[in-house]
Length: 109
Length: 113
Image 1 (cartoon, rainbow over the protein chains, first blue to last red):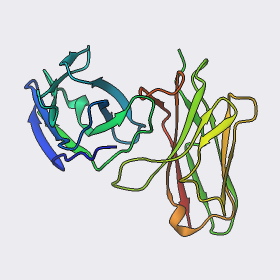
Image 2 (tube, each protein chain N blue to C red; image 1 turned 90 degrees about the vertical axis):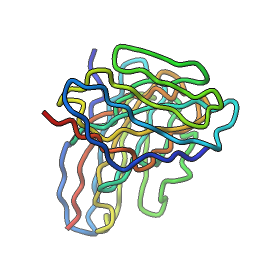
Image 3 (cartoon, chains in turn green, brown; image 1 turned 180 degrees about the horizontal axis):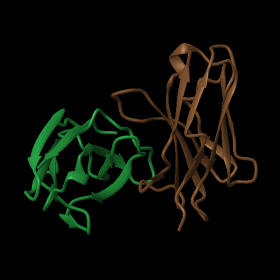
């Protein structure tokens, strides 16, 4: 599976958009980009995934660059409850998830 | 719908003692995963089950760790004997078939003294 690079931490003001970047320059054509998050003392929670096209669901939007070497997870209106570690994972469909260190997002009032 | 259930939530034991963790996946989910998460790190896969069959256990330290999923539903992860370095959170997840959209339980926090 391709490796990912994420900033170790980010801050965001409550109510503003949180944009979490992820670099995956070695991604192959059939690998998907998955995002999970882990709130303190809980198990990871699936957020969204995509292959080539941008995706949106009730939780977030995923923007994947045309060359697929990077992506951005967007939380449009961050709340204090969005404070968590966000993991970007690149993997083939049906393959195992390999979690890196993630980005620790702190949403501040 | 109930999520993935794990018990106990916390366990404190002395080194060299045995310990067991239990997981009940979401109803209908055929695939079950056990992960280990050390403090400040992401989860690491220990074993993956497809129904009763362990399809990926390459990361499971087989000298002291064992797992079973006898009827293809609940699963148990055991450590015998526990070592100080086994202190971590043990997470269980399940998915419908082999799928990357996995649903995680709250985990069991193990402390080995």
